[in-house]
Image 1 (tube, rainbow, N blue to C red):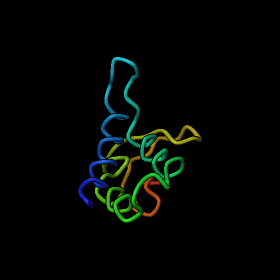
Image 2: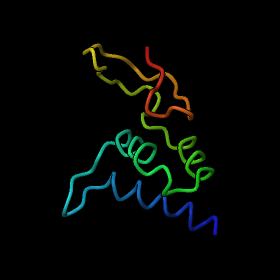
Image 3: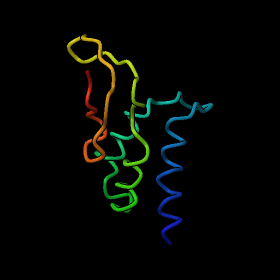
Image 4: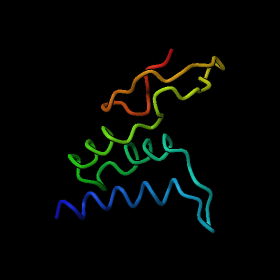
Length: 88
């Protein structure tokens, strides 16, 4: 059922981004990247795409440090590439 497929991806995201007795919480962007790359076939592709469209890895305005050590602010995100936000 579609609700089970929605619940499955939400449950994985919540479990991975929450602190547990047996593990620390992971950053949202890391979990989204893992869902996209390592668990691609585990989730309904339509549900997964909808999830990425409503759960951005970085909220707009979040300050981040880029891989080249420059500081930037998140200004937008592309649901097709959620782990690569537009920065300024």
